Picture: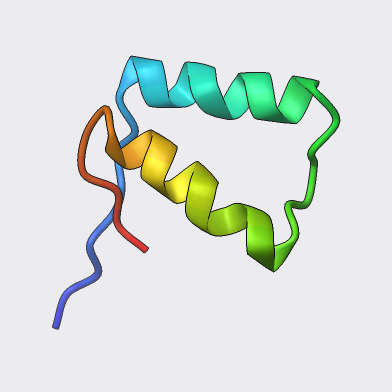
Length: 47
């Protein structure tokens, strides 16, 4: 099966930049699901 690459949309990039700039450089496992669902709100996200 070929690799599926995630190409984030501009709003998803903005969200990730905000998270990064807030100091969350390496989110804990418990923080990943809320981030994933927030990004998914704007478009599909591959894992």
